[in-house]
Length: 50
Image (tube, rainbow, N blue to C red; front, top):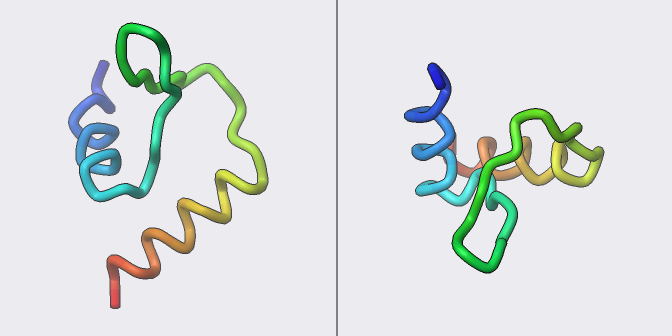
């Protein structure tokens, strides 16, 4: 998908964590993001920009 490189970079910088499954970590683009996940992403990006 077009967003794969962005997801991988965000994962590498701990902005997102993905979902742990038995055979690896997955990004679920069709799953809605929660308020807590949104807050975590915002805080992580803010820390990166300092």
